[in-house]
Amino acid sequence: MLALARHLFTFAAMPPIAWEEILFYFFIALTLIQLFYYGRFFSRVAFFKPKEQQQSRQHPVSVIICARDEDENLARNLPGVLVQQYSSSHELVVVNDNSLDDSKYILQELKKTFKSLHVVELTQEAKLISGKKYPLSIGIREAKYEVLLLTDADCVPASEHWIQKMQEAYTGGIEIVLGYGAYHRRRGLLNKLIRFETFHTALQYLSYALSGIPYMGVGRNLSYKKDLFLRNKGFASINHIPSGDDDLFINKVATKENTAVVIDPDAITRSIPKTTWGGWLKQKSRHYTTAKFYKPKHKFLLGLYFGSQFLYYPAFAAAAIFFDWRFVLPVFGLRLILQGIVLYKSMKKMGEADLWPWFIFLDMWMFFYYLIFAPALWRRPRRSWN
Image (tube, rainbow, N blue to C red):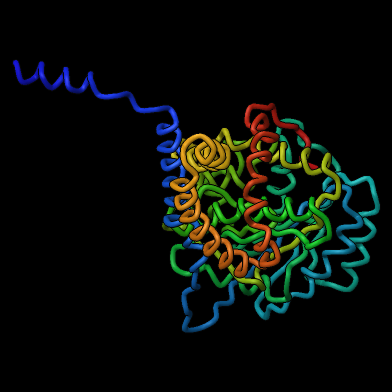
């Protein structure tokens, strides 16, 4: 008893830890979390090597595109899908969803040249089904083939081998294939910010899938089997949510065993990015309204990473100023080296190598990005999909 009292007295007599020290330890904790994500997850994309196949597979494929008032995009991008070099059976199903522009006439002209084009004209709205899910469901129902490959009207494949590369991932047991939907390179700061955020998002969902924790895909470049869609009753469980035809559906049905990833320059699709800050803010705010519906384990992993990234640079600056920069800089440098290696190799694989010289500034920008878009997580989503 006397020994316990002596121990408690000794502990009480110890000088309290200074708040500057606590700040430094907090910065170390954030660094360790960041190192964990870059080492455990993101490095899987950086060092990804596709499995060697003894022979090339040729699955019949139905490409599906839903479009509403996108006559210019259809005229510009559909030829890139229709001229794919793919020897097996394939088709392009375009669902023209109540368009009021010249989409119908452009599709009619294209159909004269390309017999693989199948057009579905929708003239009525689905009042009880929000967003893009109804036209996409109709397109899937009309598809002839089991392997479905989805993209958007404003997307164009990066090469004539897009279909070939995406369908090659369908080995035994695979029902979902995740691809990368990028944006065209343009001049200006906004373009770099848009492309880095898109790359950063893809780095996460591709690396999580490679780690056996798939949680989302993007409709600009996504493939799954028709039977998977039908077995899960399509979008029935998420029809009340305007968005989510891509990420929420994948969040529901993807598993470690049934999901594969394709990371190949020939398998990328590219879209025209927004050219105004307002247009981009509106687009991203709509996308983030679905994250609240992810599975709890996915929300935890994503939240821990976002939180550590959001606090990282403020904690770094505070620790360097109020503690001792000579101890802070080596910790910061350790993360910087690993981050630089992973991002360089990942950006090179995903066709975004020109962003690498700017990665420190773009990573710092993510602090402000989270400030801007965090409210979208609690905002009520729009009902329109276009």
